[in-house]
Image 1: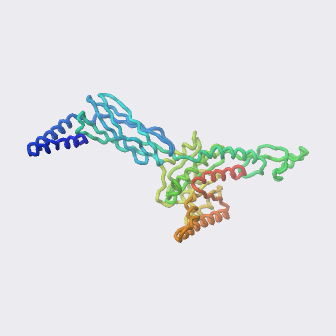
Image 2: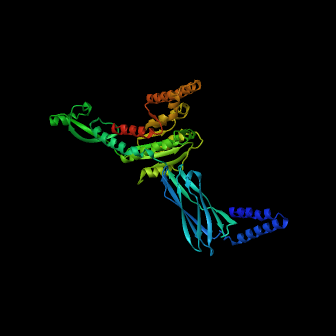
Length: 428
């Protein structure tokens, strides 16, 4: 029943109020029922309407996309329809309702703008079609399942830092030619000694032949191996800043992948908790960052503890070549002591290990807020967390393992800077 039938019913109260008698009421009711029955048979059924959804291109979180709903009138009658193109709330559908008049065999398209607020595969909901006649007293409604989904990739907001990091890497590579040889450098050329050069880089044989001091220059090797391990366990699901710890880890992984592949290195990414959830590699990938984004799009943290023995086995199975292993996980004291430290000797025997964690920016704010007594106790607890994290980093440094902890916004850049330092000093 539509609003028109309700208004017609209110209009029918007028004669009843003017002539308050049972015959008048019965006549009004009979007229209303007859009008509704007649209109019901006048309403074209919607089963002959053919529907098809065409989702728009996949986008990164923060960008807009769309979906096209095609309506085809397969009946011989004129259709007056109201359509609701529903999507999951996280798809951010805008203006999902529309009204159309379709002649027999006519086709039209409805464009629904989508503003996703969550990454992943976002499924479409039911399409609801309501058909009405000229009178518009009674409508026939049907909800149809029209499968469709849009893929929303991780945002990769840190890509704005990629040009500056790439330029910095190129500049430092040029300066690193005067440094001494490291395990990740190869011989480049000889040149005359200048003030400030490291005396260990002097080639004494070449200097004797040239009757002047000559130094060797080295350049960072290409095709080094980077293995990024992203922890997707329950600790990665906690909120941090505007997203989760897992989102910040993905952001840092994307920037490091883009920087390393641009420098000629190979990157493998392993996402794991109690089991390996996803694996991506830059080998044979035309666009490594896009391939990594697509592989990580459907992955979300799960409420399991990470199995670091399984993760270590996955890293060792990925490469036998010496690699930089970046472990994106929480710098949690219990987790580090019970789970990570026992497996680190296995990794450090073959690879250089870096542990990167996300620091909650709210801790700094809580530690600096000291108003009433409750805020002072909260600040003390926050300060204790920060001191514990700093102590863990010192402990790892004593074991020869680098660690990085920064806010979600700063972690991608900090990890990229660490890679650049290793690259130009022969640490890879």
